[in-house]
Amino acid sequence: MKNILTLTKKGILIVAMLATVLGFAEGDAKVIVKRDAKKTTITLEDVKPGDLVSIKDNQGIIIFKESVETTGTYKKGFDLTELANGDYVFEIDKDLEVNTIPFKVRANEIEFDESEESTYFKPHTKKEADLLYVTKLCSNNEATIINIFNEVEQGTYKMVHSELIENTLAIKKVYKLNKGNYKITIHSNNKEYTKFINN
Image (cartoon, rainbow, N blue to C red):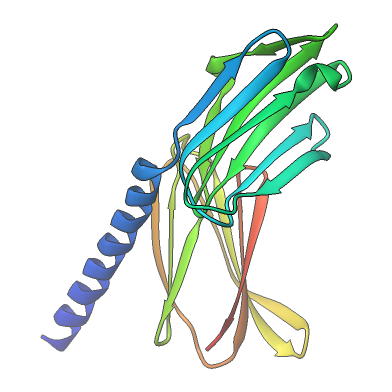
């Protein structure tokens, strides 16, 4: 009976965590792009301090980066015609979600393609007692690799678990950790997310 109660509590916690992630996703910023002859204005709703707005070129080099300082609406104008011809992307990096808006610069003309806009979700980790909970929305069924490393001596880690997760819309995993220090890496959407845990 005790095992059933423990499993039920774990199941309820996972559902609650996934609901939190879904809440972030549904409530996240609407991105409005307005263009006139030279100026492009980006408006983001429902932002909060710490959200990041950046422009990157097709090599991933950051051309502009700004941290949102106030809660509410973020609005900024850009003269994108000053950029060299090429492919670029606006990136809006929030707690659990990243919005990307690609655009092209050709002979001082700016071209946005709404069909190329995308959103991907970052993983969420939470530790409770000796359990590690990992949740992530995979809106594009993207593959995700979860690696768990145990610290064997200061600054040196040994992999104790690796898992490839594919063909799912929502990752809900629970890992039991022994005493020690851990490094968790999660690879998804061509990015790596790292979390350090002291258990």
